[in-house]
Image (cartoon, rainbow, N blue to C red; front, side, top):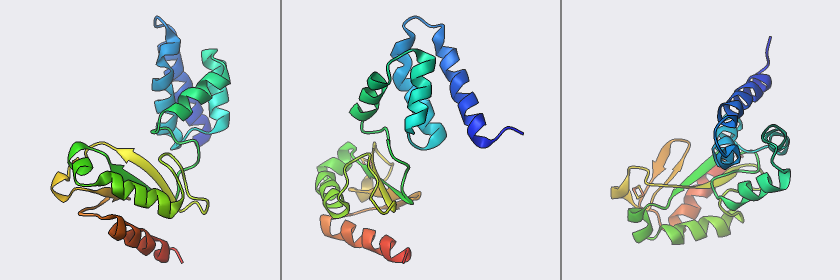
Length: 163
Ligand code: FES
């Protein structure tokens, strides 16, 4: 029986093969990295090595592309993924201040996971709840009308649940 990990590798390999015949296959690197993140939830180091081998692109170049874009996670996602909306309505209503409060409180940047593995932070486009701007989403639940103070209180509620 084929294990889940083998199936993921198979899917990734067939995706890479599907772009290999196209002109300039290396221009599909970002699409391949998206596919890998969709399959694994993040970009494991060994998977970047697989991509490097199969696409014939040096690992350093792949690593460079993966670290350049915020939406690629290089670490396993935390127990809770916080998606902060950086869409226009949220931005105008102070999303940046909320983002900074989260970053300072959790001591992580976008695309990172807290040391205790509890929270990951990722940017999002409009989450479809502009009337509640600024908003974040944790585990499919939207939290709106946030301020730097209320978002910290919210995160602490999640932390307490885990104790
Ligand atoms: S812009 Fe943030 S929910 Fe629409």
